[in-house]
Length: 470
Image (tube, rainbow, N blue to C red):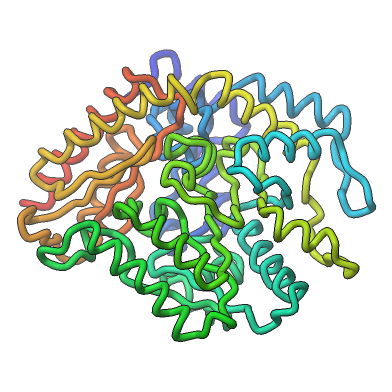
């Protein structure tokens, strides 16, 4: 493991009132972790992360780790930016909390709405604020239903999503998600949510000899077929991530989004872009829909909106939807205690300004992401990497036993789990879903830090190869 000079165990533990063993015991006694087989974690104990700075994390024993996943796709400006701490402190001192229910607003929420609207595609100018990506996606479901009711089309309620998509974990958002393991144990999906395939992932789902353009046509045709099956008069919206994230980091095939947009317009189906991961510079543009050249009717966003420093999310609506809701005589009976929280909004405003001032969505971002993509592509030379792919500051590696035939190691997921564990021990965070490894580092990462990160990834792949082939 890489040790940060000057961060000894004694110094690290001096900052904590409790030892690592004590913290782990408390965690095991009281904390149910997300997406966890709990008895397995409690048998081996969680790793205690104690601090972060820039693109680095330190655990409670002083080990330094380069964060190749930006937390959970979110810490665009890195850890420990003192200016954001100052903004949060000032905001708390000025107005620690007030709601937006009682026909009131705050300067921060009004300023954030204006700032986000200046970055979204033209016409998506009105925002509803929430606390997480899941809350934003749940809210969008309700607002879509409300809109079609106001338009006098109460049967237009079906929402079409995609297999292997990820949209969150609340009842509505998890129903939109196209991952069966998130459905069965919770009696989901809710009625009215439909999923289509093939998933637009050329590497895994294209047929032998099928061109990327032909594959894009087949994937888009699946949407049109489903709309016709359900009846256009019954279909409210289609939701998609510009780049499919947590389900496998899948880059859309060429021309896919243009065909999807044309189909939605043809059948009067709302086009909904889930930008929770792709938004705020992750694909190189402010939003993923801008990278791929389509204009949605609805956008949901979170994560990079505050770089993960505070919980905040938003739903952006186009003028047609927003103005229909604004003109309604009925009350929009939806909202959260923390909708437009003044402290979260203040932090988000400054975070977005820093993304722009530091040219992370601009010249600097273009240079570092180009270097990132070059180093990522080099990993395809490794004997167990069947493919690399990426856009902006997103990257994936497919781990295979046989590159030519795309044969996986047995059992499925073994290679991914092995590589993930090797990465963490080596001193770099990568995420594994099945046998696909993900990278999504902070946008502030430098070229030297990118080189350091891929050096550690190379070492982790070598150790994974040795483990799997012996």
